Amino acid sequence: MGKITFYEDRGFQGRRYECSSDCPNLQPYISRCNSIRVDSGCWMLYERPNFQGRQHFLRRGDYSDYLQRVGLSDSVRSCCLIPQTGSHRLRLYEKEDHKGLMMELSEDCSSIQDRFHLSEVRSLHVLEGYWVLYEMPNYRGHQYLLRPQEYRRYHDWGAVDAKAGSLQRVVDLC
Image (cartoon, rainbow, N blue to C red; front, side):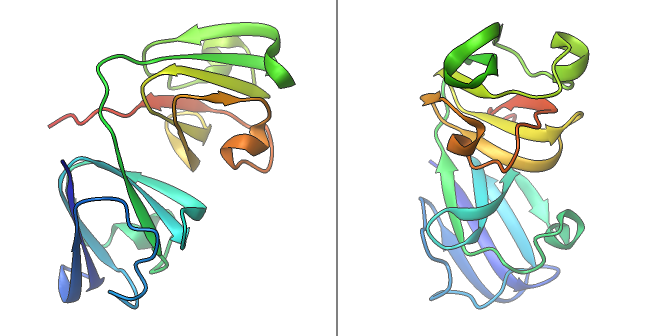
């Protein structure tokens, strides 16, 4: 169960919309979003309706002016609640179609380059759990939600190139 509240203005002011499940289109409820309160669950926000465009991951907490700092401005148009799982495991491949060198992870990885000497990941297979892939080390840059499934090419997870800097398990820490 999750709960997220979107506010049109900074500092949790203005019109608001409370959500407890996936919402493919926030536009009928709020015209813009400048602050967010996550009461429970982990959420992925999208800049366009129907879970499209840039993504941003949020855990429980108050984000009074957060969106401006991450470059989403006020363009949050859809969101999804990320299911919690007990275990996490994924495989990274240096080539498309799960070919080439393979590495397996079950914990967060702050630098794929340092740990595996890879600057690009061309395919993935998420065996268990939900993960967030960041294009840069130390959980920075564009983010991509990875569900349990096969990703034969980096386009399959929504990336425009094969940059992969870090990986983080989706776990509700509170």
